Amino acid sequence: MNIFVFVKRVPDTESKIRINPTSTNIVFDGLNYILNPYDEYAVEEALRIKESQGGQVTVFSVGPDEAQAILKKCLAMGADEAVLIKDESEELYDGWRTARIIVAALQQHYPDFDLLLFGKQAVGDDNSQVPAMVAEMLGLPQVNVVTKLEIQGSQGVAYREIEGAHEKVVFSLPAVISAQKGLNEPRYETLRGIMAAKRRQIPVLPLEQLGLTEEEIKPKVAVVKVEAPPPRKAGQVIDEEITEAVKKLVAFLHEEAKVI
Amino acid sequence: MILVFGEIRDGQLKKASLEALSTARRVGETSGLKVGAVIVGSLTEETKESFQRCGADIIYCLSHPLLGSYSSSGYSNALAQLVTEENPEALLLAATAMGRDLAPRLAARLRVGLASDCVRLELKEGVFEAVRPIFAGKAFLTVQASSSPFLATLRPNVFPVVEKASSSLEVEERKVDLDEDMVKERVEEIIRGEQEELDITEAEIVISGGRGMKGAENFQLLRELSALLPQSAIGASRSAVDAGWIDHQHQVGQTGKTVSPTLYMAFGISGAIQHLAGMSSSKYIVAVNKDPEAPIFKVADFGVVGDLFEVIPHLKEELKKFKS
Ligand SMILES: Cc1cc2nc3c(=O)[nH]c(=O)nc-3n(C[C@H](O)[C@H](O)[C@H](O)COP(=O)(O)OP(=O)(O)OC[C@H]3O[C@@H](n4cnc5c(N)ncnc54)[C@H](O)[C@@H]3O)c2cc1C
Ligand SMILES: Nc1ncnc2c1ncn2[C@@H]1O[C@H](COP(=O)(O)O)[C@@H](O)[C@H]1O
Image (tube, rainbow over the protein chains, first blue to last red):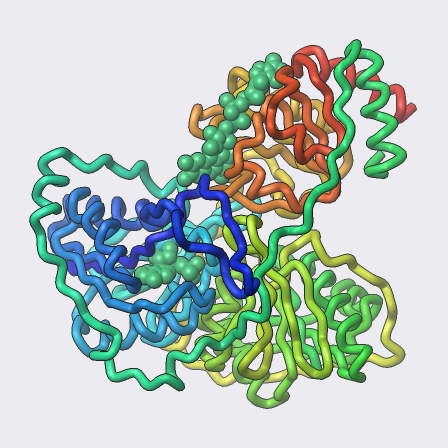
């Protein structure tokens, strides 16, 4: 089983987000980066499939040199190979462009695979676009927001989360799967893994080598402005005897929120 | 024309699709754009009436034997055929599980961009402009299409359903051209939990519990509250989910679901930034916490400082009194 996993480096979920003075993007300086939490489930799932069925796990990231840190984390978790597709552009919030780059890299350099694993969403752009776009561009089946995956030979069954239920989806390989929390519990890197990953040279595939024209990877949604969210006005906090407080709460539910 | 995808689940049209239709009507009106709805399968009288009430001028029904159950590749192929035939200016979908799965595949097929999970939409001098939260709502991004049609998914519960009937309504059946290898995945079964529950993304009221609930059994208290509040569902913080007190389907936050109900109630939840990410676009927030310094009070419209195990029984009593 040849499994590819796509991982993105994203700002730590606790990060304070500031807007740049020209209101065209956020300020990236000083942010602490992590492996996108959903991608961690994808890496873990790849490792589990490899452990039970044999095969090879390769992780890919499209991003700047600094993205090597998350690729090394994946190696330390147990991935066999890692590739950086080097793209120095700032976050463009455009799924099309990333998908196009991934597809070009696969078609030109890594055409043999059985399974493409993604996170269901990159925290940050919050797009949930790249996996389905890659699936369409390559003409593959897709199952997104997956909480359980079973692969047998060239057939797969995935359970995907929908409102209040799960869909059991059947498909054949090769296929695109995106991971949701609940799929598994990601392992910690071992100390030995971390030491070994440190010494690894990660191959770099520069964007220029993919022969994509500017036109092909031009973002398809134009950013007009980035701004702080509308502030919530401070409400009232009641710190008094419970019966009184609850009476006021019920009045609030009736008169203001109008839900009762 | 602005085209809206009408999502049918269990024979019922999703409310979020009517939100999208109402939005299409609102922005279309200013530029004299027609509003079309598209469904896959056959049209029931009830769905037709809903579409008419919210202002559809035309309904397209796409049919093919291979589209009996949902498939992202099959549905996106069918929709792409209609888009190619009708050339709409925009196509809107609700950002539901189906919409989020379908829209990016459709975007890639049509070679256009996609604005995901939008909370505002306008048409300004012929240009569609959408606002969408990024970094879990810590920033808001305004985008315009640089390709056509403009494709967007709209966050459920954010856009109002506005009843404004169209003067006339056409219905058109369209045959879709498909063969078996274009339908690449198949939903074999839909597996539901034991009790029929409203999903938190669709509820008017979300009643959430955190670590302060102290145990799985105490979520029963929230369920009892829920029984007294119409259209409500149970949510939870990640701590409660990680402790195994409640299933992940109920988690609100950055790695859970994003909800925008009319009322969000947080019991024993401190208000960590990752939790706020999932609920700060709620219309009203109520928090009950015994710590007056809890950060949740900074976003709450109404906060009660107190022990939730005392507050909930009182609240139940008051709600019962209020009802009678
Ligand atoms: C990558 C990442 C992703 C995350 N994603 C999410 C996410 O999606 N959703 C999420 O919720 N969290 C998420 N978190 C976790 C988040 O940081 C917090 O740890 C979590 O939200 C805390 O949950 P809590 O408020 O229930 O618990 P706590 O922070 O422990 O708060 C419990 C609160 O209950 C109050 N309390 C205790 N007893 C009572 C009582 N008897 N009556 C009234 N009040 C009482 C306490 O005063 C306290 O304020 C994430 C963290 C990381 C690192
Ligand atoms: N720059 C990137 N490099 C590698 N994988 C990515 C990148 N951006 C997105 N992905 C993958 O696509 C998933 C969904 O991302 P998005 O569509 O941006 O929300 C992520 O969880 C990753 O698995």
